[in-house]
Image (cartoon, rainbow, N blue to C red; front, top):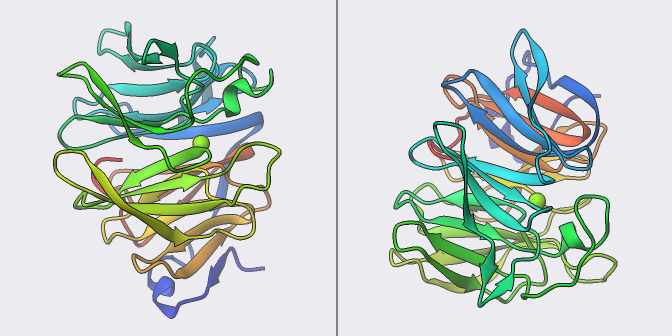
Length: 299
Ligand code: MG
């Protein structure tokens, strides 16, 4: 079976027939949140149930970056290169400073605790956008079971002003998020509440320079499975997790093709020296494939 499924012939130019879809690490419980550190030559990712952030280094393999990780899920880097992490366990978003110390940048809204920050993206103006669904407090598997104190929404944090604002409250359970290359659009996956019949879809919003979101609308519905993590390449194509691998969706919303793996994919990121390698976490394993395509400069 081919490791690629080409639906739109244009997708054939995005993949390389002699580049393997390679399992680079396995044996985990439930991995998510890959983030590439080109300066350190490694990939960080979360194994949420085992309460660890792990590091994969080419030629060396896997080592522990941080444990306990407070059941960290999604990560990204800010424009100073610092690690930004969503922690289920302490229901907060943190920044790891260059000296290794950890700064809490959000843990409450309106005097009530966040639910379980899930995924995060940083805009070029330094604002930090994250989703806060209930998954990490819905049971004791990937955090600590607890009551929800705030609705499941998307937040925009301005670390300079110290302000936290709700920017989208019309989804059941927002999950992965990513900006278009010019940041005029924000894509947000809505994976619905656990044990519900909520629709699972990717929405897209117009994103104004002042941070306001308007015009939320359906962009694409992933099948099989659903979109958890999403990333955008330099041409504006959206790459999404799915139950059968990674799907590539054109800016007009049509499915162009798939990268197929035998495990459901959770999250993904671009990495490598030209951001031409796609790393993705899939339940028990981490995979990598080299593409003829580059991720946006800042994830
Ligand atoms: Mg997620």
